[in-house]
Image (cartoon, rainbow, N blue to C red; front, side, top):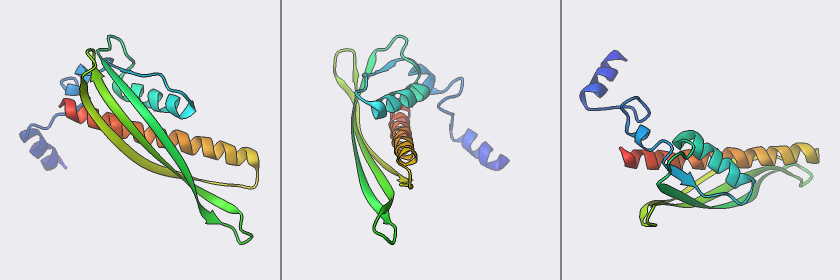
Length: 149
């Protein structure tokens, strides 16, 4: 393991979030446009966790979220027992002049079990959608941070 670390140090590897990492130059500079729904709020929260709460934002991130569900598990009586939740986020990062800096489309999925109670199924569905937004926000943040390096 020490040899691996020494090899990485020799090749110029530096962590993005370290004291000298390039990510610190982006922290608090990106304002994410206000979301329209619960999934949007989850996406914004996670992006701000990763990129910092806007302080002196000179970049704007806009995101369009699309989510769909597909039944993938069935009980012997034909009732649905499991759903996949697929999501896509088209996003654009622009500077203060409105010029496009970076753009992308991220996709991901998660799933949840449909149980016998409506309350438990509704809770599982909401949790799956929040988890999906974390997955997609992490993909977006990784691309932005990698681009800043």
